[in-house]
Length: 316
Image (tube, rainbow, N blue to C red; front, side):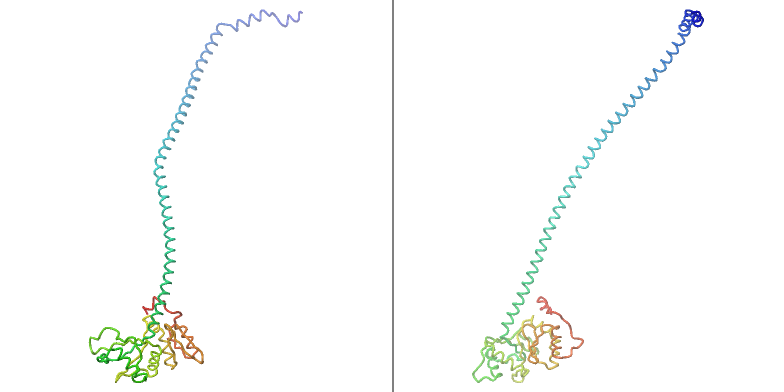
């Protein structure tokens, strides 16, 4: 007990000494003033921080709303600007589509017309060939006589005069005359006596009589009337004559080599050689014919691989 009392001391005294110090008026006033000043200092800071955060929030919201309204305005303006352009683009697309359709239709029509034109051209060529063939068939009964002076028939009909004269040329009995359909002079009348007499075209009724007169003229080279030489020619269409002129290099070589030939349909040259019938319808096939006949071919001999087109016959 004694030790404990020494160690602890007087508790009442210690309490009395510490409590007054803690609750001393000087200490309480100083601490309270410090606490109040610190409270007063912290309050404005919190208010400022609250105000600044509020300002920041208000500013961000305003900016967001402004951006949204700007976006809406821009969208509206862009839509108002694009709307006419989109309409024009649609119209342009429609125009392009219509143009493409029109072009396709025109192309199809052009191809159809081209094919039709080609068929018509083929038909025209075929028809021209047939007409030329028919014309030559009709002309096959005709002969032309050149060199008989005008007025030779005197007061006789020209058909009767030609029948009597031709009968004398082929040695028919007296009173027997060939039958002629018609005989007339070709071309306009002479204006001057110095001009050559017009040709006389005679149409025979009998092909045999016509061929006999033709053979007689070829054998003698010409016929005779008084002192005049009368040349006898076949009556051919202009197209056939032009084609035969194109074959002149071949016929000249045949004549120079004394090779007999005859004309077939149109401008086909026919030669009988060693029992074979050789024909040439153009200059290229004529070259082959000359080789078969062993006739030298000059270097200036022209080359033509095909017959001229029907449309070029009149241009030859």
